[in-house]
Length: 248
Image (tube, helix red, strand yellow):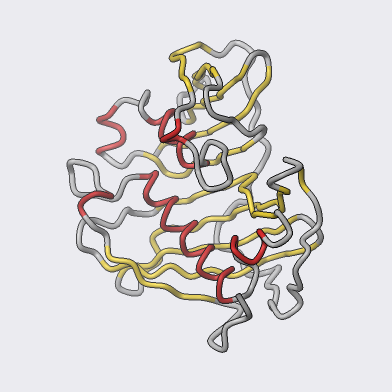
C-alpha cells in the first residue's frame, strides 16, 4: 500500500482490553501484552508503506529478533490503553523500534524491539527492498531503562518439557509465532507468581526459526539469588530461543 496521508513518524493507537486477553485475575496476559505491542508496530508499518503486504511483493517480512519489556503495572479487563511507537534506527536489514503503553496518561510498559528483514522464500535476512527515508528516526528517545541484550544460557539448564510445533503455533510467515515461545515457557512458571504480577521485566532472544512438526525441548535455570529465571528452547543441539524473566 502507498504511504498513508495520515502517516506520522510517531504513532499512537488505542486498544480496549477484552476478556479473552486476560488471566483469571482480570489482568492482561504477558503474551497478549506482546501481541498488542506488535500489532501497534504493524499498524505503524502499514501507514508507513513497509507493511507485510508491501514487503511480500519482494518476498520479505519483518521478523522479531530481540525484545525487552519493562513493566510497572498491567492493564486490566475493559481498560483502554494507548500504545505509542517510533523507530530508533533503521538501516539495511535491521531496525530497532520503541513502544510504550499508557493507561489514563500514565506509562505502565516500555519495550525495545529489534527486527530483521527476512526473505520468506530464501529463509534468510536481506536488505529492505522498500523506501523508508520518510520515517524520522529517534535514536535518543528510548522506551526502556535498559536496552535488550544477548541472554546467557546456562549449560547446566534443566529440561522441563518436550514440545512438538503444531499448525496452531505458526504465523503468516510460516514459522512458530514469536509469542508462542513466550507462552510455552510461561506455562512452566508458578501460576501464583504470574497472577501476583511479580514479573518486573523480561527479555527474549529469537535465535533460529521453528517450523511445523519440529521437536523441541524447553529448559529452565535460576540464578543464585533467584532474581531471574532463564528459559531456553532447543531443537537437537541448537538453541532456538532464550527468555530471561526478572522478578520484583
